[in-house]
Structure formats: C-alpha cells, structure tokens
Amino acid sequence: MMTIAAVLQSARQQIPHNEARMLLKAVLQTTDVWLLTHDDAVLNYEQHQAFLTNVERRNAGEPIAYLLGHREFYGREFSVSPAVLIPRPETEMLVDIAKASVGAGRTPSSCVLDLGTGSGCIAISVALECESARVTAVDASVDALKIAINNAAQLNADVEFIHSDWFSALENRRFHIIVSNPPYIANGDSHLAQGDLRFEPPQALSCGDDGLAALRKIVGTAPNYLHSNGVLAVEHGYDQADAVRKLFVDAGFHRIMQQRDLAGIVRLTCGHCPAVITTAPNATVK
Ligand SMILES: C[S@@+](CC[C@H](N)C(=O)[O-])C[C@H]1O[C@@H](n2cnc3c(N)ncnc32)[C@H](O)[C@@H]1O
Image (cartoon, rainbow, N blue to C red):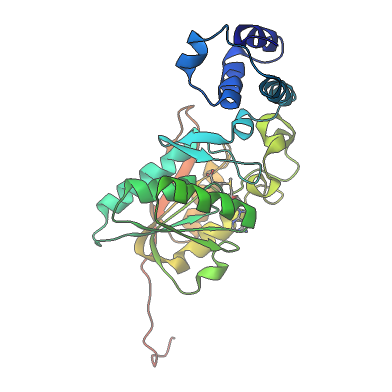
C-alpha cells in the first residue's frame, strides 16, 4: 500500500508532476486541495492500479484529455473520447465570431450552423452564449454525434444535431451564420504521426492530398445555405490562409477578414455571402 505522496513521487519518473496530479485527482474523484492536504493518505489496491495504468498510457503518449475524459472549452467542461477531436483553444475564435455576428444581426433570432461538430464544443458554446441563436450542428460520425448530444444535455444547451455529410441532409434550409473547424491536414502529413494527433480520429484531422478538400466543399457550397449577407467563418491550417482566402473570393464572398491565433498564425477566415438571387417560379432566366 502506498501513500499519495509516494505514488506521485514515483510517477514523476515517467510523466510531469502536474499531469500525475490530474490523473490521481480523477482516479480518487477528489480536488486539488484534498490532494495537497492528504499526502499521507493510503491508496487502496484498485485506486493504485487504475492510477498506474493511466500513468503508463500517458507515458506512451495518449492525450491527457482522453485519459481524464474531458477538456475545457470557452469556460465549460466538455466530455471527450477518442471518437472526437480534443477541442483546441484557437477554435474559441469561431465562437467569438458567431457571437459578434449574432449580436450584429438585424433578425430577432439568428440561425447558426456548425459543420463537423465533433464534441459539440462550438455549437454548444454558441447556443449558451447567444440566447437568441437557434443552433444546428452536423457531423458525419455517429459516434461523435453521441458525444455531442451528451455534452448538450450535460450543459443544458438547446442544439439540433443532424447526421450529415456536410450540407447533404440540410435540404433547402438557409442560415445567418455558418461556422466550421473542418479536417484540414493533408493525407500523409508527417504531423499525423506525432503527439496527440496519433490518437485522434483520422476523419477529424485529414482531408485530401492538400488538406483543402473539406474547405473547398464547405466554402464553395455555403452560399447555397446562407441568407443574403450571411457569414461564413472557418478555421484552417497554419499555411492555408492564402489558399482559403482565394476559395472565399472565388465563391463570391465579400468583406473577407482573416484572424491570427495567440501564436500569431492566421487561423481563421470569414466573409459575407453574396446576395441570394431568388427567381420567380415562371420567370425565364436568360
Ligand atoms: C477538426 S474536427 C472539429 C470538431 C469540433 N468542431 C472542434 O472544433 O473541436 C472535424 C469534424 O468534422 C467531421 N467531419 C469530417 N468529415 C465530415 C463530413 N463529410 N461531413 C460532416 N462532418 C464531417 C469529423 O467527424 C469531425 O468531428
């Protein structure tokens, strides 16, 4: 039988101290303060084995968020599993853009669409931050949608979830704001074999030979699903800013704006949709 102090000391040989504390806190279902004030408490056999297993898995590279089962995003805890991408801090910029666009809108309730929702972190944050927004979220992965639906229930967020290959199940609906953090790493990119990415779902990470296949589809198709002057905002890779700006220009978007993340990398592109041209049923188009 070992004390808290002894197991933490021993784990330090394999993983950083702060991570060992997080893993032990999760196994004991306790708080930082309790751990600090009870370092002579003794772990039972099951607790010790569960902790050792997680230390081994962390030492082998498994992301701490998957071992803990949650990750913080926009001030809230989201459950995560290997079925979903671990929410990243830079993605919070998409929530900021959606909030600003909902606030700027002239309609009483803005319809917001999140494409490729994963854990639901963007859609749920927008729904909770913007009371007047009506939020829809789609994903092609049923397993991801189960996590997102559970997160929405836990956080008491009203989001409509739809199983869809991008826009395909949305029929003729239109939205005021579309946000997306799609897969944008090129197939075979060496980063996929490094760090947390080794454990995250491939369909959440990579897309096409240049990583732009999903972005091409989303930017090119979004005008058919946006109201006039609606906003599209997408996250993209560190080296894709120019290519994505061109996709926006080619699709007719105007007032295109790009934003840097905290590391100074241009990570986000957004723009306003061209006017929607509606044709009267009997009109002839020349
Ligand atoms: C980079 S992850 C983003 C997850 C979440 N929005 C976030 O920011 O943490 C991309 C998501 O797109 C989904 N996805 C990939 N291909 C898709 C498709 N054809 N249609 C809909 N969703 C798709 C993946 O399942 C994944 O959940």
